[in-house]
Image 1 (cartoon, rainbow, N blue to C red):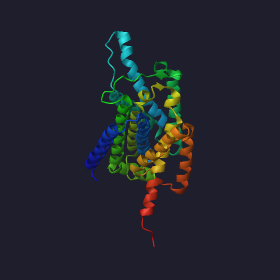
Image 2: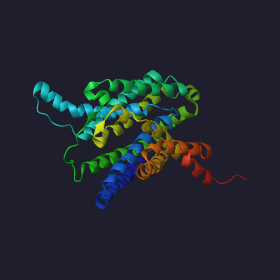
Image 3: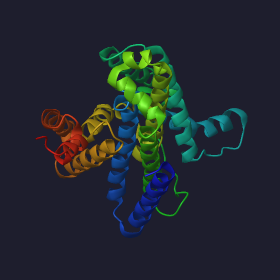
Image 4: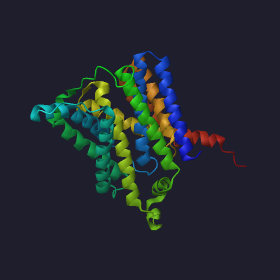
Length: 327
């Protein structure tokens, strides 16, 4: 399917999904749980652009995600600060604008991180991204404007900009982000950019010797990946209403962002979607029926299972079944 047709198809599916859920689902919990699953689709696709397509493992998901969340906190407080300092009329900034700003902030940091660390390879790059998460968490913990270590309360607007409750509005926005991230990942996979990423993943030295601009491509990958993670995190303050460094830098974001593409399959845009829906749904069910404390245990057990039984994920497993047996 050509790119324009795919975009039309995925937008139509996303629109139908929102309309049908709004029309037939009244239970508020569905939107709370659905938001989390959609958020993981965005994070998984974002991680996979760098980790799956390009082959660079990123443990800094929490940093980019939290930068998007705290960008929204800054923009949320900004009108009141300007009014108190200069007497300007306080006009609240729309959440879609906050999402774009969060994407820009995280994308710029991703670009800088890539420029400073992408000459590192393998485990050394992974350690550098983990160090980034620690540095960003330390800075935010000591930044009083956004609440510091004590956290900050965010009051949701009384009315949503569109019909329905505010959580339904957040669910709709995250659906748009999920559709956009899937479309971007699929477009990359089928483009020359995706071929360049794959050449880096398969053999970076050979790619450089063949004239592939590896550093430029890696910078593009880190920027896109960071931007999508920041956009996924931007609505978080309005979802949780209380944000602190512990919740925004939760280990679950980093672990799930890696585990979901691994379980679904990292070589295709479909894999992260399957992994996010499967693992995200299991975790939401476990949270309601047993305890949220089991979520990381579930992730660990599934990772062990798939690493042993299906190292290429569900996509690779299905492809191996469909491949005709050699004589």
